Structures are given as C-alpha cells and as structure tokens.
Image 1 (cartoon, rainbow, N blue to C red):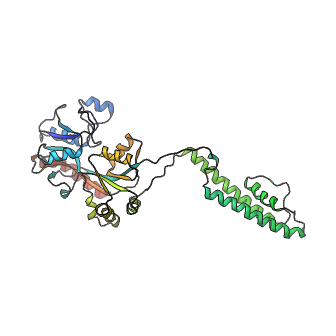
Image 2 (tube, rainbow, N blue to C red):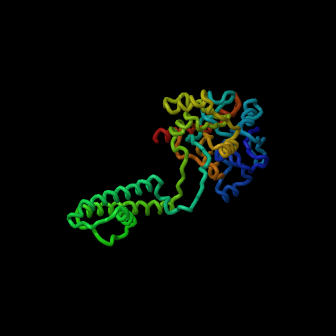
Image 3 (cartoon, helix red, strand yellow):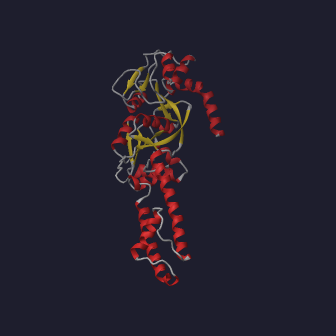
Length: 359
C-alpha cells in the first residue's frame, strides 16, 4: 500500500507540518503524542484506526510512502493511479473531484475567510484627543462659539434687568470654561442665563464621562478594524472590484452556484464571469499570496485557516462564516479501499448526521 501525504516544505522528514489539523505529521511513538498533546492529524488517525481493523495493510512508522510538496501534485498522482489513498480532506461532492472516488463524509466544517492583518501605525503625539474623532471635536468647538454668541445676545438684552454684562470674547470664554468644568467668577442673575449655563454643565459632564470611557477602552482593549466582517460585506467588496477570491485548485467553489441564497449566486458570478478568482496549489502558498497582496481573500476550511493565522500574525481569520460543507477521504477511481474505509467510518458518519440534524 502507498498513499500520499502533502508536505509543504522542502524537507522530506515525516515530522514536518502538512495540512493541520487533517494531516500534521506521523509520530514515531505514542509517547510523543502524550508529551506534546497533539497527534498526527485527523486523516492519519482515521487511516491508522482502519489499519487496526484489518481493512488496510499495517502502516509502520517511517514507511508512509511518498511525500509531495504541493496539494495539486498529490492530486494529479492520485488521479493517475500512482497512489491508493490521498491523505487529505475533500469536499464531499462527487462532481467536485472528477477522476476520484470519495469515502462517506467524516467531518462538517465551516468555510472561513483569511485576509491580511490590518497595518497598525501608532502615533502618540496627539494621544489626548484620540478618544473623540475630528468631527466630534469640530462639533464641540462650534457649539462653544454658537453658545457664546447666544450668551452675548442674552446679556445685552437682559442688562436692563440687572444681568451681569459680558463682551463677545468673555461670552465665548464662559462656555469654554464650562466645557473644561471650571467655575465662573460671577454667576448670572437671570433665570434665562442660568438655564443655558446649567444645560451646558450637563453637556460637559456627559462629554467628559464619554471621553474618560473611550480613553479607558483605548488603553485596555485592542481594537482592530477589518475590511469586512460578514460574508455579505465581502460579496459587496467583490462587486466593487476591490478584492479577489483565492481558493485551492482542489476546491470546487462552484457549489456556490447551486445555493438558493442570492449572496452565494453573486459570489459565483463575480468569480466565474468578472475575473475575481485566483487559485493556489496549497493553503500555505495561498497564505503567502494573501500576505503579498492585501486585496486577496483566501477561502478554506475554518480549521485549517485558524491554524495558519495562529502560526503567522500577518494574516487573520474573519469572524463571519460562509457555508458548512462535509469532507471525505479521496481515492483513485474504482479503488478497493474506498468502500472498506467508508464502512469503518459509517457508524461515526451516522452519528455526525444525527448530531447535525439536532443542531
């Protein structure tokens, strides 16, 4: 028996990461798994479990077969019949992978979106004014000037009833002092001016409470601004020509075409007809393309993309989700092992389907 594992580095050692969590590496002993808390990967675990049930010949450590550098090269060799099993997870659709047989599904995973992490630039020169935007500061300044003009008009009219006189500059300075929560040397005498001044004191307290809260959040919470947060927003950016979608060669994203949701149909339209579609031979190469081009979005299983993001801080996974798809093992056409492995996976598959239906 020979089967193909996808290794994405130049090294041919059996312990290099491949496509976690589906294929991580092959442990020489169970003690290594116990010490590190991680195993060889979900797909390799399935193959080893199948071996123990005498469905496949025994798989000995160090005798796994051939390792390839890219997923696409493994796929071509598997379709040509040079290997018996492709240790990789495929979308469980017969029309998505011509020339291959698929096992029963063994995993349900969300499709996620990987983008380049936002570029951070920190300038502390005007740190004290950052809790409010420029527009807010401009509105506050305009309110002080308008209130000062109103105050000046009131005092000119109410001088006849013994109101304290103020000139134009002093009138504006009154509200600037109130905004900074400073006291006045002489309080107004009429209820009209007192009411206006009291209202400004209330506004000042509210503004500074908001300012203090924003300042506290600025120092305690790490805020990131991403180009989009949901799948629908991503589709809108594609329609505007600002981004392109990147997928693997082995991924048939055409399943979007069969969706009844309008947003998925729009995605397929942008990809298939408007040139918003790129391909990569492996997830790692896709990650490198995302890092090199900020207008590229990599689509893939959430499990894989979260591991890529955890390994490289230059990329991040958007919290929004796309479709949920089932994944299967891949075999050449008419492989004798497809049915055998499917029979071993069938009990777990039925359980997964029941759990999915309940959720």
